Length: 58
Image (tube, rainbow, N blue to C red):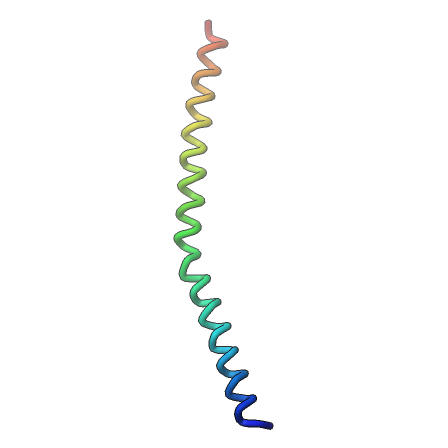
C-alpha cells in the first residue's frame, strides 16, 4: 500500500475521532439546556393549572 494513502486515511480518521469527541463535549451542556426548558415549561404549566383551578372554584 502507498504510505501517503495510509497517512491521509489516518489523518481523516483522526479528524473524525476529534469531531466525535467535540460533539460529546457539548452534550452535557445540551442536556442542561433541555432540562432548563422543561423546568421553565413545568413552571408555566403549574401557573396555568393554578389559574384554571381558580376559575372552577368560583
